[in-house]
Length: 399
Image (cartoon, rainbow, N blue to C red):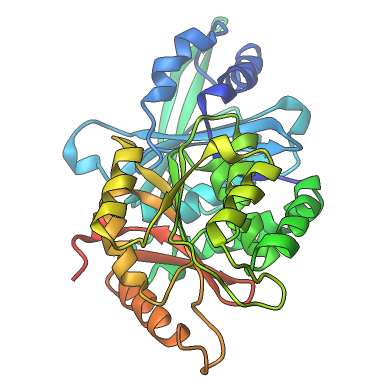
């Protein structure tokens, strides 16, 4: 089964509620005695935030088959590092490791969310769930006898808990980031069996110097991210089109802004006398022109920075694609104030031949930001592309 774990969006709420309501009659999972509605659950859904208390869905073949959410355990400040998690799976897909995959993802991501302890409240007679939590390292931290009453039957409640390792700056891959890296690799394998793989292969051959795996991840991030997308160095539009396809398939309204100064490029496969002209033609050919705001100019020019800020308005960037010159830190500093704290980062030219004058300074910039705790590394893809997340808001100002 192809399983994708992504941020939930409001369009998923009917499926989420349907899965939830199916558990009500079982008297095994939820303390609700009557089914709920999408309208009633909308305020609850909107209380979640990707940066602290995310809401994820498990998706297979375009269908939501399970979900997991984080919520505040108790309101007092001393409990801010503790979160309660709940997990639900479509009854048709139970016993197929969907819940386990969601919980493993939560355990892996917890440190990056500032969460040091996870709590699960499980009814004492729900043996399958208790065994699953125990298998993943949770311990029984509390037991409340007979506090729930279902149809005149008293039921116990077990408090399952797990301490999560604290994340240190520059050491993300040792904790939750490691799990998320494996998840991204698994996601790539899943996409290789989907139609978008062949679609992006054609885009890569015609318009991009990036590896196909990188374009697939750009598509994936654009599809699952909650905010807007900013690309520096659109060139002929390979990554731009991949991101636009991701936005298209997400069913959400997201701004996609691409910065390109233009000019000409000599290349045996992708040579062009007029970058901006060919970029516009390629976007139009694939029907995504109206989805993309192309800003002509150098990324570091104050006029370009201002144009990006104006185009974004109050929105945040949740996917940043950087494929321009060697000055990675400069471009990140130009736009860091627009990044969401968990913004996906795709940065090219991290690795390559020593003769490539872009590689050494690019890698030095990225490594310095990782060491400072501003970037969280999640892997290296294709020929030379670094992939990770932005953590600069939590780490403070870039030194």
